[in-house]
Length: 390
Image (tube, rainbow, N blue to C red):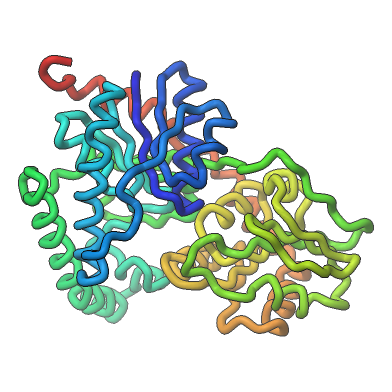
């Protein structure tokens, strides 16, 4: 199978795309990755055929559009830039990241089946859940159900507006206005971070986190046998600022060791009980007692599959939703607002109460109850006849 995997440059989306491409290659398929130019050389070093995804640079007209219209208009433009690349590669299937909808549009324009990759839980609206992003558990009883109904009604207008904007963008590139959606959805999370819903889509498959390490380097761990705390500042632009600095200040004198896992740079001066840099997170998590992170899906899921409890310092985007899901599961404590003292207090609570580690262990034990993403894609291709002339 010749498959194109399409994702933008954000690490939380590019890394799962790289991981999935590697799975395709190991299965004997022929993947080609289209992603942000920052990660092309890294993907090639990992043995993948990777190309820069066109259409990602801001355009002058984007500043004049509202956020929703900008997203859908950009997706249509990306599809036009990608179209000749897909034709040249003669791919059988496209897997497109949920934030890079242009990949799916380009596939549709070519008559190729496509699959959506969600590197987090399923965020589609549900008649049985409060709006995604609220961080709330489903309401209980008449009052709780009424609360959820009212909240869904308040967000329905924005959802309808987004669909209308998507339809305008689609017709502008020659596609029908109504969006048929993907042939399948790969929900790259663990069961512990998903929630039950009465209207789970038949084409949505929980496939487990798609994890890739951008380095083979290993970070040194400070000497001693004190609890090891891994601090991982968010890589998302919506992440909370200054988390690492606050954590180091708050944990000074608390009797723990700290390793900060950062993509770019780090503090120039560190105490002897701390280290920071770019290193393999899986290696650190095998030794960690606790993770302090922003609550982004990648690090949160990675900590839980290693059975490590978490202190979350959520920023924007979906971090509040994910932090609350982990807290309800029992493996996390949420810190908001974040201060040096509040982070240190949360670390003390989690390290001193074994119930958090026990909940994380339960999350890890259930992490294998997922489907194989490559098999899902093969089944999609088997169900859908190739376009005429292929």
